[in-house]
Amino acid sequence: NAGVTQTPKFQVLKTGQSMTLQCAQDMNHEYMSWYRQDPGMGLRLIHYSVGAGITDQGEVPNGYNVSRSTTEDFPLRLLSAAPSQTSVYFCASSVRQVGSTDTQYFGPGTRLTVL
Amino acid sequence: GNSVTQMEGPVTLSEEAFLTINCTYTATGYPSLFWYVQYPGEGLQLLLKATKADDKGSNKGFEATYRKETTSFHLEKGSVQVSDSAVYFCALISNTGRRALTFGSGTRLQVQP
Image 1 (cartoon, rainbow over the protein chains, first blue to last red):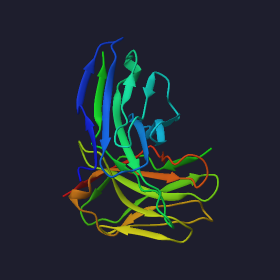
Image 2: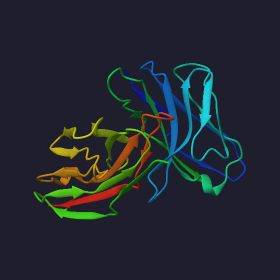
Image 3: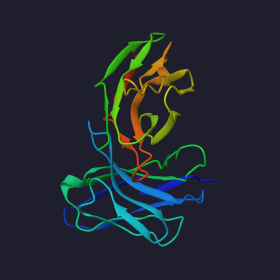
Image 4: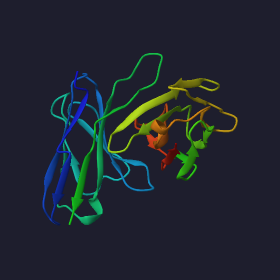
């Protein structure tokens, strides 16, 4: 199993450009989510999905779109990049475990810089 | 809402010193508690977890006990190594609402030889 994969690892954008951060998992996990990591703030939830076709907003959804057409993939779209979106983005997946708690598995991250 | 507060860093220790990183939380329902570790240039790895009061999570010499009465989940290690240098995040998932982690701000640990 590759686990959770993310592409690209690094990206530089100009203000106003759009792009898609890719996330895929091969563990058949129902739950996937996107977080951003900023210095001194930990990780904050952007969007999440509880299964194919179902998505919802997290704490900081503005400026981002998501869709979940398959169980495996959960891309994050930046519609019009802004310098405030400079951050490290992590994708995570999990499955509910009977009698236990969800354990989220994280991808390696995408470091995005918006100039 | 849910929140996690952990001690600010950086924490600088000498090799073989005792480590404590404090973590307290506020949550609805009965949360599960986690410690994640992030080594330089890498993603987050689950270090340990506890799912109910008085549970002790442990891994790689690290321990944390779920204290409901003090709403705490402090991370400890008896003897740190240079290889433990990383950023440590305390986090929770509530058993009500969405299944997403709420993170603390992270504590950077630097261990000197």
